[in-house]
Amino acid sequence: MKTKLKNSVWLLLTVVSFYACQRNAIVPTGSYQYLYDLESRDLHPEYIVYHHADDSSTIHFRVFSSELLFTRVSAGTPFVLNIHVKATVSDLNGMAQDTLSLVLHEAAEDRQGWLLGSMVVPMRQGQWNLLMEFTDVSRNLTQPSFISCDKSSSLTAQNYLLTKFETHEPVFGGFVTPGQMVEVFSERNQGSPAPVLWKINAEMKLPPPPFSSNLPEQPGFSGSQSSEIRREGQGGFVFEVVSGLYFFTHDNSKRLGMTIKTSNTHFPRVKEVSSLEWPIRFITTKTEHEEIVKNNYPKLLIDRFWLECAGSKEHARELIRVFYRRVEEANFYFSTYTEGWRTDRGMIHLLFGNPNQIIRSSQAEVWNYGEDSNAALLSFTFNKVDSPFTNNLYILEREPGYKPYWERMVQTWRSGKIYSE
Image (cartoon, one colour):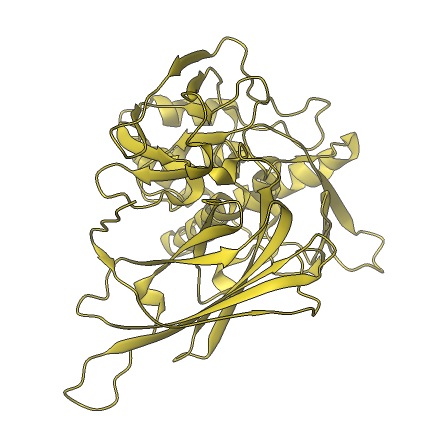
């Protein structure tokens, strides 16, 4: 597959080392505090796992170039970056099987935009944990990231690589802009019949509040439309993503495949009015929110809402900064078949902020607000749920007893105060 990247910084591979080891690797279970706090991290690398062969997989990665430190030896010499990327593949018991390291140096004329790269790691069929460690050597900063890898079948989502048709740049997060032409590659399914593209008929609603007896609605295949798509020459499968939710599969009977989602242009960032008006529904009344979304100038009403909450422009700016930073964090960490802020974890994150403690296992997360010894400890339990559309779906265990805490938190925001900051 040829790769052409626009407005990006190229990576030059200078050293590659591989070795097998039998030490215990870090696995994404345990107790954490700032697991979902973007501001506590100076590096924000993103990854895509693509199983291109039975015995190996490709890890695509990107990081915003402005987060990296470019240095030079002396005046007159070019500025260069010094990056180390390490991948450790472990089994589900935490035993490391393989480790691969890359050392990357690149002279940069333009330090704007994304810096992208990829590496091939040995990975057999099965289910694995992947620990990625991205290090900016010049800043002496390392950011670990944990990724679950499902290679139990050639039909699981990571056997498909979604790219932008014009540039062949990988689509990180699986969200594309409506109207985008995309191309899907699946080398492990080359001998399979033509794939089917489902247009999922689903309205993405806000999750019910934590005290509700209802559960979030999940999309399904009922009422959805399917169509066969064919390969473009020797490349991948090309089609236009108009809007909503799509499901790409080589086997309709098993409901295994890749989900393609649409969102605004700058997702997961919040830079458009449409990204501002819906998250505040959690803290507005129904009437207030209807006035905002129906108004020809919703930004004016949004600004007025925050100013009334804060009492001053300066404090309103701080409320807006914190609230929409949490929206971006939710998009970054909790996105499923919909934006992260629309999920159960995103809803709690927006109002309550980062917990004092997150207890994480392979099938659940418990968020604790307050100290363990405090009788006022508030806990939310999110259980992982199987879905054909995502591997990141967690549903809150709802309880009527959450109602006073929820109402108090809504009022806290409306009074211009910020909890857990």
